[in-house]
Image (cartoon, rainbow, N blue to C red; front, side, top):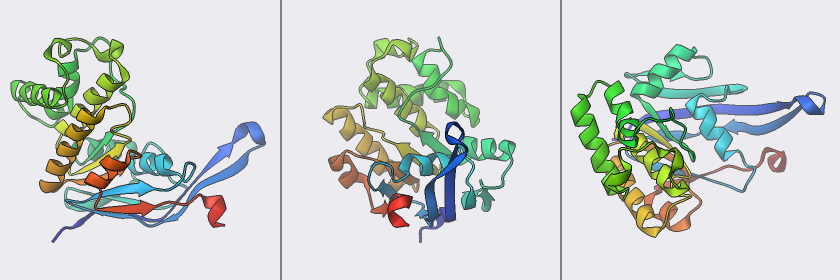
Length: 233
């Protein structure tokens, strides 16, 4: 039986608009979400419903204003609402992976090393990590001539594939995907679907924002609907 590995309870998040007299803008309220190992849940809802804010809150980039964000880590729960930064970094390294829409890496580092780094950080031998990185890049149709180059000058689609390879290589038990196919053509979208299906079969819990309908239909076990807070009031 699949076990719950991520859950939120009454999660709320607001932003203070300092340039508008300190007015408060609520974005999330009362969010109760659960995610089990081996399933893929895709966030649904209109623009402005807080999908990206929720993802960043789950990863600890945003501190929530109320409620809890619990991550199953080393067979215990860690609440990102109260955890200190060191604990959050530990959870990210071992348990919680994240693929954002944009590649943010150290300049002038070759693509192969960028992709392999998370696996090396988890204790894998360097050569094995590089071999796995090379395999993922080939699977995502990134030609070998680019593997030794820094990705700063790559196209948006090429950078996204580097980001995806880096996200999947770590083998994190929980993986957050923020628009993983936004810049990809049909062939590379299919490659991403294959990676998600394999990760699910291996027990990975995946939460995503996916606006591409065919990709969403291919990977989602269920949708989680978010509504704009103002509309729900």
